[in-house]
Image 1: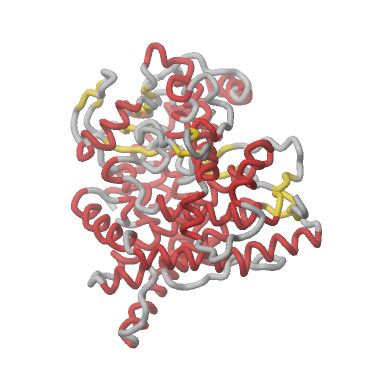
Image 2: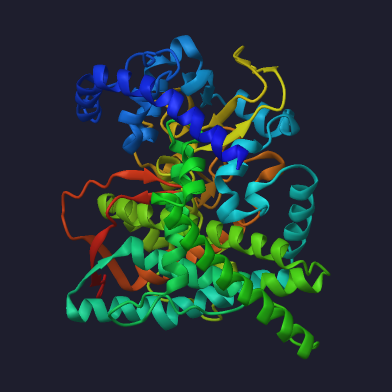
Length: 518
């Protein structure tokens, strides 16, 4: 009760200041916001007492990634690819695209830059103390468990089987029906359903059936609640004053009430799955334990909350990242016929005899490069924040104070001329490739992990990277052999937005066409 009273008092104290500044500056910043999509940002935003640069940040909240990119692009000569924003109540937020800084944060001084209390507080309702929302010994413990499970050959085979089944039994039949009916699909929604079913099978060992091979697509309470919890949790990070969402939560009003209801549905459902799996394993001790949940439970980790937190985190990672990457990939392919032609040449018109999904994926070198290039421009996780555990100095000379928010920004990094050259804006898979002298075949040439940070780097590097590529290549080969994905609007220019992960604003409406005798 005391905490509630203090939060309310602080809110009431600062609101008049915010109100005065808002009235005075409203039309100026509203105008800037409307022009921001066409006018390049050339200098750091003005900072005011108490509220810092909150007005400018708020005016650009719908295109924050693009705004930050422009800010860094146009101030780089003086700021070395790093900017510092003034937030409310004297807080400062450092955002960097400098690879030396990124290596310092993610590897060299890893334990100095944990996720931190701010991130943990914002996401705790949804993710609890799952692997993406925890630090220290708890994170290390979960990482060890997960790493062991992810590195087993049997799990890789299970993933291959799950992806192939979801493709042949649902996604491809749905596309075939769509060509017959000449219907319009939201490809982003379809791919998210596909990824959701896949990760639930892999993580939980159950099939939610969220993707249907026919129309209409079903609504699943768990999936709908998961999406709402993801969006509402991410909005906590953008609160003008950090404690504002906590006041709303205390009074159970607005977005916080919606979040509570959505999280309750997600956690109730996930907990019921954990309980059913425990019961299943107890009753059938000889049951095959292919899914991730069974592996975790069989390793002796049976605390219900601990296991549920882990699984929810894996669903978040598996559902949103691959679907986002593939959505942008297919849009880029629709605009780049040369790349499409090269991929078709690589995958062939039919599955090879004795088809092995894992072996085929390894041979899809050009496709791998095209996926990397797509994620360079449209990373599934456009930014990742840390919190300084003590004072520090970054390699570029910027001073970091204890408690300061420090973010590296993959979206902006993919758009830096200093990192990718003058043609950074071009979708060019060949920048990842070299021709082998003897065979003339393409050879993939990876980039420095601290320049291309799509899968993180250092101790927190993504465990599911190989499986993500396995799944994405399976979809690309399966779909492109039979179908062409065509945007409904030939001049369609999607807008990149992000919550915890990236989205294409409003979805991606497409028509599916048979390839025929190409």
